Image (cartoon, rainbow, N blue to C red; front, side, top):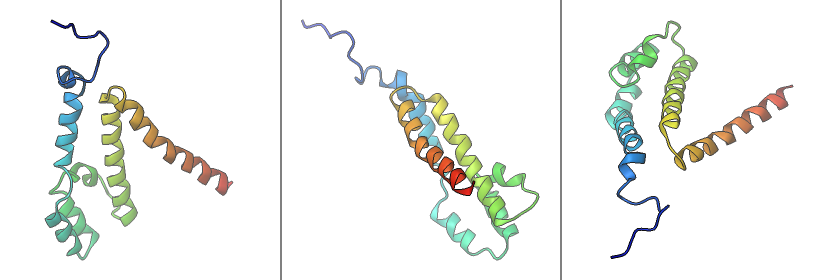
Length: 121
């Protein structure tokens, strides 16, 4: 009978404890992606009000419901804000090493923003 070495991690016996919630969260978020039929309906829209109406039937309903001034940049900002909010929530729920990886993928955008500020000054 061999004993399991202490300090070994990453086995199937503790995957759900450490990563089960975040995996279920991501699988749930995957269902909120726009489907082909949603894109087709949006491409058939003639006004921004039609686009907003189509988006209210998806997971973007909360994001676009508060838009009073309906502009293309306003719709884009609402969609980006929804994505940022969900990313931050996933980041707070993640454990190592996923948490560090999620931090790493945000650093490039932080550096780009600083470079844009420096170019503008």
